[in-house]
Length: 233
Image (cartoon, rainbow, N blue to C red; front, side):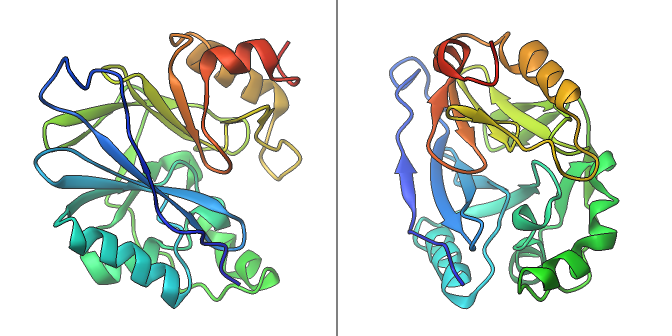
């Protein structure tokens, strides 16, 4: 069953008048887990995909049409982590666009159980494609004239990463931090203390006005979560 509600174009106001280079973000909500998938691009039309979670034909069509209509060229596909709901589109991106996924090496074991777990939720998953590369703390994800910094943020899942753009003041957090809540820590390999350390030492050191684009649900800001998130006091 599809959870797609269509593409949402996110206009990033910070730095719009200060720099020629500006990242634009398109958000899609895919599959029954309601995963936020993102396409980020700049004026060069090179783009990266973050968590291409499209599964059924209508979602794949929506994703492909956005790429084609905006004349974008996918140069990288990043998995924020490798839980089943976030990797459902990996094979599609490889088969359609010939772009292999990139993720933190600690997320690799999740692929060995993906097919079985997928079946329990009604998803038929092919053998996972090989990684193009493994990302680690401090790496830069470059595309066009833009770049994002990689934070390693385990706790919800081993191998979780966040992608930070200092220039435009936003961070893509996967399932680490959401509006008014945090990632689950009752799953195999998850750890509440690790998650708290990731949030407090990596995310809560960012400026309060940093916009948070999570793996599920609406965006928020670092400052709002510091003041209001009931799990972090």
